[in-house]
Amino acid sequence: MKKILFISILGLLSCNRNVQTHPPVGGVLSKKDLDVSKERMKNLNTIERTHMQEWINGQSVKYYPTQLNYWVTVEGFDKRERRPDNSPISYSYDLYDFDETKIYDQPVERRDVKFGHFDELKAVEDALHFMHNGEEVTLLVPSSLAYGTYGDEKKIDNDIPLIIKLKAL
Image (cartoon, rainbow, N blue to C red; front, side, top):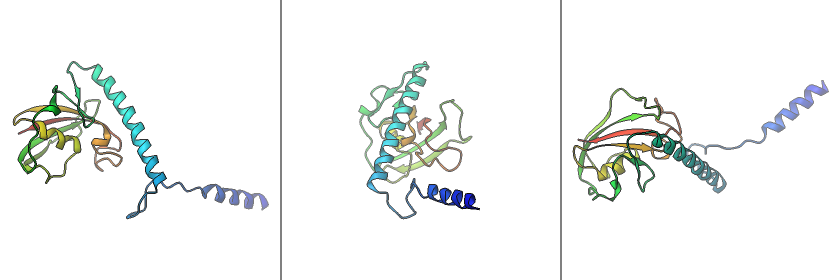
């Protein structure tokens, strides 16, 4: 009986170290938690960039880095004249993983949306600012600029970098 009591107490004490990984709903993270999260994202970004660069090295198409931390198939892309905010744009894109498997059968398509008034992946919105009508580009996007640590809660898991084939209509 003493052995069972000792094992039970030992088990309870070992469970006492409750490490918080997510804040409670409506709660905030402590500075230590924020620092841990920041360091995790920094390390993940380094790993993803290394894997993406290795993938790029095996491709016949050339990719160019942008200031926002994604790659694109157009040299000097983010040096172009930027479309003004509130200007309308129509676009569509397909999502692929780095095995080049299409994630969704149908492309994501938006018609006549105005910059600054639509909710889109950060890399897609940034790229659209520099695209010409009718132009198609391919983006290589790290997970932090795609669906991040939560995924899209459908087919895209957390921390997944994406290939995005984007077209300005």
